[in-house]
Amino acid sequence: MKSAAVILLACLLFVDVKGMVVYPRGRCKCKDEGVKFIPPKQIEKIEVYPPSSSCQHMEIIATMKENGEAKCLNPESKFSKNFIKNAQQEKRILE
Image (cartoon, rainbow, N blue to C red; front, side, top):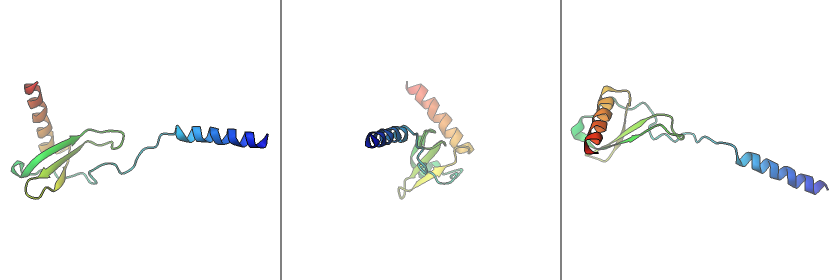
């Protein structure tokens, strides 16, 4: 009888732990707020990551032409806001 109770208790604990939401930490690609400006001629490509469950901040990552280095752009900077605005307008034109 005791072993049945222990098994039942173990199953209940397993179900409870399995259903818990675990938020991953440190999943953001940018560790700081990023730079405010990069000369456009030096940029090979730009990737924009919207806020998600793994990172609550918008991230803008620019890959440099010269060395392939990735630099984070500050999403609140004027340069970044203009870039996002222009990209959205281009997307509307292409659709």
